[in-house]
Length: 314
Image (cartoon, rainbow, N blue to C red; front, side, top):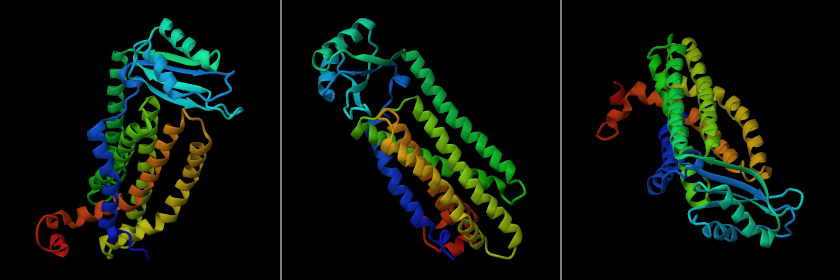
């Protein structure tokens, strides 16, 4: 039998190696919030008659002539021509006249522009969206804690299962947030309203996998009453391993195809989902159940002092 739980500190260390760089990036650069949260204007335009790809530096210069120096720009590709003949720009709020002047300036190089979408969000609306996003994640975490606690009420120390599920959930949230901080700095990604959708989806998948593992632990505790708790937990994780991995692989393959062949504007959203769901599968298998064993044996007593784990469990 695979010894998964017995190597729990190895898997905890792997999680730290993944999470810590993201937290460092978050501390240094913060989250790259889009206009959905900070307020501003988003313009998506395409030069349908252009025979060359859009130069991002020229787009930034066109914005600079109107007094906008802090602009995030990405190109978008036309599937029929294979050219990056469009762009998506996020900036401070601009007027209709300023938008028209920017596009007219670019038209000298790329021809007339077709505006596919244009929106402006005020700063007060952005702050409301940000507060609602944080509230949504917090409300989901509290609801999950209470639900798991209630669902496992027939098991000794049922609250531990709820707490372990929440810890695994926040593991996945930290992975996603850290990725966004690093991608925002190095790739120019920005967090928009789709990020909240991705984050809540990751939370749902993470808890789903964790409950599957916990439910098998509950069943095996009734079947193997004389077996050591750590052995029962490891046996349960191994039993659900194939199901968890195979179920998530079907989702991951679909997301990978979307990330490779989907549009530029949805790629950050898809990759966020891809990483988050992969993290959720990992935390459910290697972290959540292991936390129950650490709690049962009270192993934290030996983390910063002498003695062995056997003494801590006594």
